[in-house]
Image (cartoon, rainbow, N blue to C red):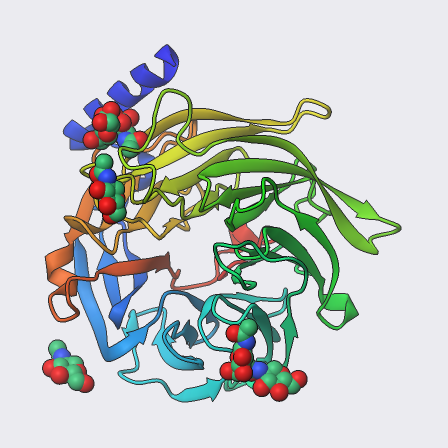
Amino acid sequence: MVRFTSFMLNLGLALAAPSLIPRQDQGAVNKKLIVGAAGQILSFQYDGKTFKPISKVNETGKSASWMVFKRPNHLYAVDENSNTLRQFNYDPATGKLSDKPILEKTGSPGVVSLEFNHDKTRLLGGSYSNGTVDIWDTSAADGSMKFIKNVTLTGDVNPKHGTHRAHQIVPNPSGRFFAINDLGGDAIHIMDSKKDYTITSTAKVEPAGCGPRHGSFLNTNANPQSIPTHYVILCETMNLIQLYSVEPKKADDTLVLTPLQSLSSYGPGFAPLNATTAAAGELTVANNQRDVYITNRLSGNETDNVSLFAFQGKAGQAKLEFQAQVSSGGISPRMMSLSRDKDQGIMFVANPQGTNGIVALQRSENCGLLSPVPIASIVNTDISKETGGFGPQFVLEIPATAPSSTKGKANKNA
Ligand SMILES: *[C@@H]1O[C@H](CO)[C@@H](O)[C@H](O)[C@H]1NC(C)=O
Ligand SMILES: *[C@@H]1O[C@H](CO)[C@@H](O)[C@H](O)[C@H]1NC(C)=O
Ligand SMILES: *[C@@H]1O[C@H](CO)[C@@H](O)[C@H](O)[C@H]1NC(C)=O
Ligand SMILES: *[C@@H]1O[C@H](CO)[C@@H](O)[C@H](O)[C@H]1NC(C)=O
Ligand SMILES: *[C@@H]1O[C@H](CO)[C@@H](O)[C@H](O)[C@H]1NC(C)=O
Ligand SMILES: *[C@@H]1O[C@H](CO)[C@@H](O)[C@H](O)[C@H]1NC(C)=O
């Protein structure tokens, strides 16, 4: 802990003196971000100090709480308040967004997560309201979506939700398997793209009522395309972070998840002020497969927090260890994502409530720590004034060109 405290002090000093800011900020920073808020989709340019607005789509009543991008210019957005999947034109070079969807298709209601298969010919949508996963064909050159089918989650459900909720679709880096985090079913379902997108196994998440929300595969193998070795999940209802081992069963017939560890998402010595409202939200893993970031939401404190856990995957000793936490700058951080430079030097966090809507936290690739104070922010009143004070819930950097360094890594929004 002492080590990390001094790191944080160093980071704090570095931030106070701009000349000492780590290397990714010394060159010209020109990142383009897409932001989803209630009733709006926005794009910004981020130069390392400020966020400059580029486009703003006004869509009263809709909620683009998740988006994915396919080159050259196809942006897909959920509307979690309806059953439509929308396609927009988005130019990654300029950050300009079409002022309306160019195509809208009907699928399951309340979709909150989208992911592609490896070559982006299929798009999967996870429905919170309906407990289904929609499978779309996105192979057409114009990016248009064609509905193929929906897959219904099955098994017991917890009393809090009373229904299955496909909260997140998590691709493994090879793009073959997907984990479906089922908040209402306390389960992680494995879907296989080679078997026509059927669910081939299910791991129960315990204790009952845990409420698995967001998660990620982890891989300790040198080849990132190999079958992952672990899975980490964040339970919203019980504020737990859990580690599973992952093993292929019968020549990759399916993946088998076995629980290894369960610990508080707050880490030792921290607790929410209001345990009734506390609901852990997002989980993001750095490319180094070591740094696992989670958000603790609705803690009842002045702001909510982002916490860092370190994963070590040594055979037989795999574990997660709490490292540190910093303020998210606002309330209810629903989604966060790392910048797309090689060192992933920035964590962008989206807070729908509280003072800061979007913050950029400096990240150290050496130790994974985030700066305790944002290096840039957009206040919520700048974003949410037209939409009843409800600000951003999604933020994603879309690089102007496909980064070659991500070859062989997860294809997430490449
Ligand atoms: C957004 O659209 C709504 C109605 O669709 C309208 O009332 C509102 O003024 C618009 N806001 C802006 C900033 O254009
Ligand atoms: C799911 O697919 C079935 C056909 O298999 C269809 O009847 C149903 O309307 C679909 N549900 C949704 C929400 O799209
Ligand atoms: C799923 O959606 C369909 C179509 O909107 C609806 O008929 C069905 O009742 C929904 N099921 C659940 C479990 O919400
Ligand atoms: C948030 O993090 C700060 C800094 O470590 C800590 O003082 C505070 O207790 C944390 N708040 C919660 C709700 O965990
Ligand atoms: C959150 O509340 C707890 C309990 O009062 C307190 O110990 C902690 O310091 C608070 N954290 C922040 C960031 O206000
Ligand atoms: C916790 O939140 C609930 C629901 O908003 C509220 O009724 C209660 O007063 C809060 N408790 C504290 C200690 O703030």
